[in-house]
Length: 281
Picture (tube, rainbow, N blue to C red):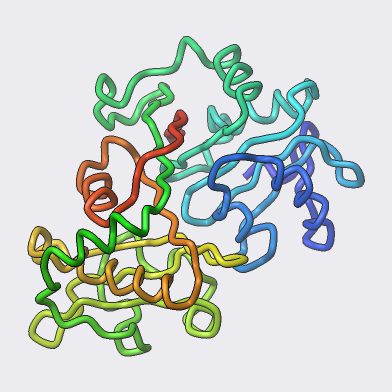
């Protein structure tokens, strides 16, 4: 999409390292963008200048994107406007955009303020609006997690996720949407699956993992939700994090009540909230 637009540049893979200094200045969870930058998964990076980039749009294949850096390049801003409005019509599914810097949120308001609509008002409609919800970053409280676990044992069979479990659950928050392939996942990632009658009921896995930080992804079979499988799988993954000195990380939309409540039950505490823009198609 827009790969040939004169107002932007598709950054060559050999120049991805030029994104890292600006990315590391951000104070919110940006692991999904780092996964693209460090080529753990094949995404795209658009910039204002190939040799000396200062504005960045990092696109993850799981329809997530991160906008940051310089807001003063008019040509790049025009590309952002065209991209978000999908003026060429090539985006065929929703994309969820984060703009963690206040300067970019201000710029987006200037560009699209009349198109913003709250998630409650829009209610998932596909239109020319930009649906705005709230994304929550959580911080793990180890003491709270251990206290919750001490209150009662998990009564589910949980196993380390192996190749026979990979892809066993249909859905969206699954390892194959976050890793290039199963070989990469099993070489570099980790997962735990809660079982029901020898079938995978829920899998908690490393959506992203870097430098002692592990962001949790979780999916549960629709017919088995509400039975404690997600809690069991996530608890095992968190136990793994504690033993192996990983800091578990959680993020979700505030209106995703199930994910939000599960995070709190696992000892996570909400810390940072920021707008989450759903780009229509």
